[in-house]
Length: 516
Image (cartoon, rainbow, N blue to C red; front, side, top):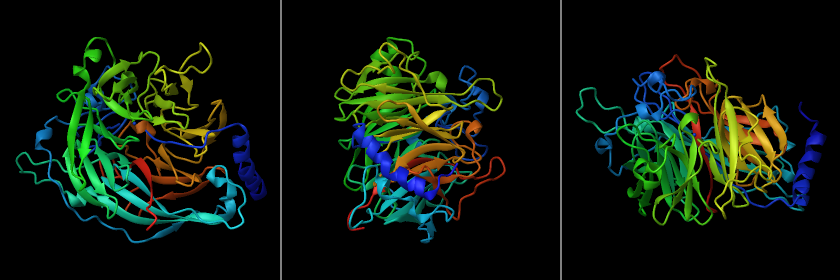
């Protein structure tokens, strides 16, 4: 039910005050998934890992029913033939088609409190502009929108540019001998600490591309292995890559070195199956999916998958670049999101959808790790460490800027659970306003969450998480209203099976330098 405008404004003014009285912290953090193939196209992604087109969902009979086309049946491991050249390439800049928030939402729903703690000011000033970057797996491109916040109105959002990998790197000729694979299926994205570069993980083609944020051009292409799933940048600026791998190319964690021009090389490698800690035990998975580092970047915490049957969590010591601890996989079943919270604790999600054939039931869980002890934090003293996400197939998660709320996306059940940032009690369950949501990112001013929406032919995960409106939805943090869904004139919302179709997944928000 939509509240009257007066009630929404009152709510906008009081929510941050209530959060402040409860002693909420004043910082926030966000992110965190894999792949399935589509016929006759370059595909792969999160809950099922990257695959060649001829790898079917039945290939791994031991896997959970929700993981179609797991990573162990994915693209061949011959990364030596990958393109390793530093490539300068023009991007296709889109026209400045300014998209205002839906006119069905009143302009004044962005109130003084939408930044998570502000009240009335004598001379309000609009926040600085920023960019929203999203990966469209189906059309193999990165789409960038520029957002200009307004005073007492919703932000103005304009399509800024696209990086179209299909245009920049066409498919090789059919008779080409051992041609390098063109970058395809951009999955996850992150920015360098100085904001000059964007790093993009490509699952099916097994590469990491480096983009210049200044002009959205390609600085370099680095082969990183089949099922390159996530690129993540730590608080110290270190660049790590989680690679699912396959039967011939075991899963691994990489650390990259990036020079001042954006040329990336592999500096260190941790092959999970070769680590003494892993070989000494019996574990369900060896394919890194997502991860995060603790606040000082001395440890990494990495989730495994891509399917729920391979879900687990491991801790990496960054000094030795080796596994330090593997958590009991019957206790922590994390195969998705990973973030550091405002309090320094580490948060993870795990889950699976209910498959189309309904052979199993979808689930969604989340977990907390204490950074000081490295131990899981139970919900209550002596209680379980596994908490419900109030939905199925938990994926992305992020805190509000003031830390008062934790938002968790459930892909299969199409809902976002909003939890109290301290007590973790369910504050609100947003249902019916997003279709096939996946990851989310918070705007720099704390006013809005951006949420990627999957397409009708998911290139990661299973078809149980298919959606009908691929794009990026904008949600007001305070009023919970959906303001608009960002798309491009070249989006393809639906197409026959096997045809190109938009499928948004990875997402990051970039604050612009003052000169912009």
